[in-house]
Length: 274
Image 1: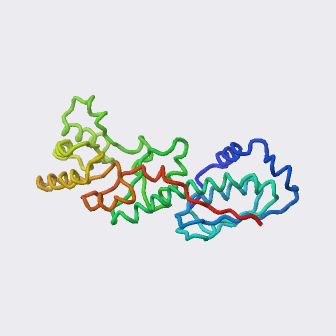
Image 2: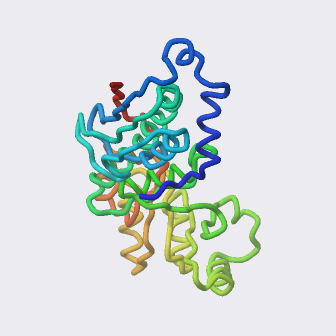
């Protein structure tokens, strides 16, 4: 996968950690000391962020060999990258590169776990990333085999109850209005109970996002819709994790909408110096 952060962004990340050089290394390691640094997976993980870490090292003057690309499934001990260069270069980038891979791989691994347990139901991740992390968060989601639910508000239509409280149009008029004015886009309508879902399905909504529905309510909603001959696709949002995603898939989800991977625990990367 390609590096999704620009050089200036990578240098800013590095500058935040090493704004005025590495004082400890300057005091203890001779500037001509040549060092090799090996990154490997401490435990099993879905890898992400390695291209960005490698570019950060290259920009600083190290030579880098990538051993696995983002999206790779690694076992404990599998190599990630090797970097060689002057001691002051390698030490200064060490932690920034390590943490970047650990954080992105945590997201990718969580996404992969949800995909693996979802019985073929698509996993889609929301736009609720940690602020200022969108590019790498999206890469991590895709590295884990999931897709984006929305990249932002500019390219998709998601109608919340908060929008609807200001509308004078009926549900059917709202659906028709959106079809007429955005014919290439299928609007999603978020609903909070079964009755709300039935109202918008009867109005012609093709996509419903069931927010924080219990498993019983999802099954009931699906049965009610089928009984009326209505077949909107159902996206299930709220409270879905790798441990329960199979239950939500079995309850009738056509897709899972989640923010879970963004807040996953980072994966441990072991770093060895030679």
